[in-house]
Length: 256
Image (tube, rainbow, N blue to C red; front, top):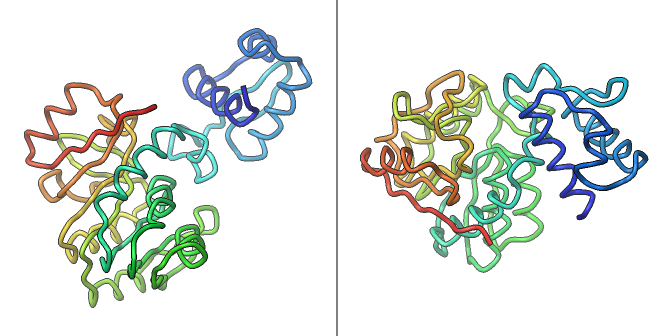
């Protein structure tokens, strides 16, 4: 097992159990104490956990929203598969809004065969990749920079959006629920998403199955305001039925 894969599994265990002993991790992964120590050092540097004597504990902030670096360690294979599937929905010459987040970035990474795209984004990660790797005009929407997320939002971003129109918007999710629909944690990001949904022909949400049944801090839009949701095949049957019942096109990608 590669170190990256092991670190992802360790992070999942910490999220589930809230704390774990080094000895347990050594037994689970059949590696040395030194290897686990390096893994925990790396995860602590990323803000994913806090090392304590004999093991590690979950950082308190993970009861809220994980940071970008933390989210990047979660469900990586699901996000890659979703990125590949969602990219099939994008056509040459499309004008796109690409949201912040790890899953929209995976979509961006799979647009290499598309021609003459125009990509508007609030994500510096998306902008960096699109500028270097794609046949696309990339426009970063103005606003206040959120350092940890490497994105922009705020009143200036919303003001610019009032004068734009997109063919498609690729939106991330803090949560997806049948009662409140699409939701997210940061109020400024929620406001930006609301504006985007009002000025796009097709609102496409990309989300791994862990987000279903989650109610984040604030509603973005109800399910009926969305056009498509792309997720992985670990989605629970209940949520398949709820999404289909709402009239949203549900696309499920298979994991290898």
